[in-house]
Length: 176
Image (cartoon, rainbow, N blue to C red; front, side, top):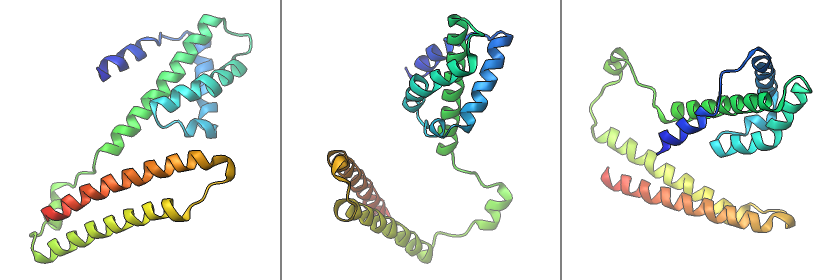
């Protein structure tokens, strides 16, 4: 379903003619310098950025040189390019660096009792760090008067998420 949705979204972009391509290039350069565009790290963030900032930016760059259909083509191309970057960054985050065979041969050692203790300490420290983060959000960090409700909602979400991760880490600790 996800691939079908991506395919449908990408199908909206058509091949750009020369003036559209020029505006597209200028728009991408301007977006690269934009601090708001950097914050768009999810597909929802890209859509939000394009609905507000991106369309205004394209309108400012375009002026009267393109008609509405051409502007829409540029808008879709810019949106799809930003979406592609978001997908690429998400894919690269999900991949771990793989050691070469030579590196693996140098690093390979038996999982003995000292390695087991070291792993347990790392997991224990991760649990402790998460507990500290949850404690900070519950007790230490305060929001201004105008953001009280939003802060409490965020605090609840963060503590729930940290509790869930801590529970999984404790299960991992039991496996070790």
